[in-house]
Length: 416
Ligand code: AMP
Ligand code: GLY
Image 1 (cartoon, rainbow, N blue to C red):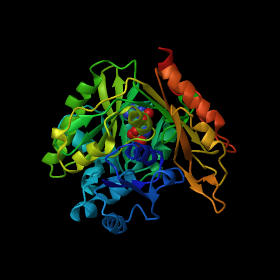
Image 2: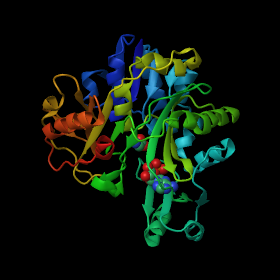
Image 3: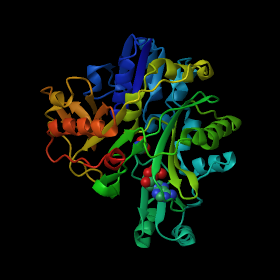
């Protein structure tokens, strides 16, 4: 099978790593890729938002499957011309990707499907925003309606800051604050059948102890030893399946990866957000534990044959990933610095490995930083404590001027 992956972050590196280990995959391509992906796949300098160019590339390569990784091309509708050309594609249509592209749309779908989520108002004027903030009280939750790379959400006790964020966005969703731990649960779906993966937890804040601004994610781990035993089945029954059924009923079936960001509140499980793609950095740990070869699962979703698939097989091992970000991330990331220690960070016994996010090769062939989240080190172990220790051993090998990482990824869960 020839597979083309669209995107060039750590999620796509993780997808390419799993696909490269799948004996069914004979050729692996990625556009645009990054410096790490280039070692596993043939990379192509194609604009990932250009559906015509992506379709032309897929046709030229005679790809049997195209996997669209990031939200930007999905929301831009890159999957649509691929499907129209008869190419199997893993990733939702533009219409279904609105589940991530518009928080107001997602709220509407959840209301239609009876999915539990935070009560909310959609506001377009400062007066509406002020009224909504006062209706819920502090802490305030203000979300940019559109895509914002994980940085469109402000959670604050400061009413002035909440109003300022609302004023800076065209349209915002203001909602009640959800307490309780967060869980990310991914499901692969063909629009009818829903196959949940294993839950993971992401660390969204920039600094240790969940301080600092929201980011795209600073680390993750799986499994969650503290999660209630019936969680996956409950979320399948009350969130994932009803959402997939509702989108099919509306005539915009969702095919691809449905990501439920959940809060386990004192009043029950609530959806914080949906994404229309694998989450980063959770994908790094979820795929590290998946034993079933990946390509066949993604192809079955693309071909509407998930119902025929054997149950997924999972490793008993634990996985931890730690993100190394550039100086100044998320506000003003510094780029263009040489990264050393990459080879040393890959454990000789294969228990820890580097996945590139914002990297590129410079003219001299050196790997340099090219984004806010630069790379992540993922490790597996017999338990979270061992996986964590191995991931941080890898991080300690990385030398990048000014770089930052959290030191408490999976710390509490490993201590349990
Ligand atoms: P989102 O982009 O919707 O996932 O929001 C990013 C992060 O903001 C979430 O992972 C939560 O940590 C936080 N957040 C979002 N919505 C809420 C809410 N209603 N209550 C509490 N925290 C929230
Ligand atoms: N881990 C958060 C996200 O992918 O949106």
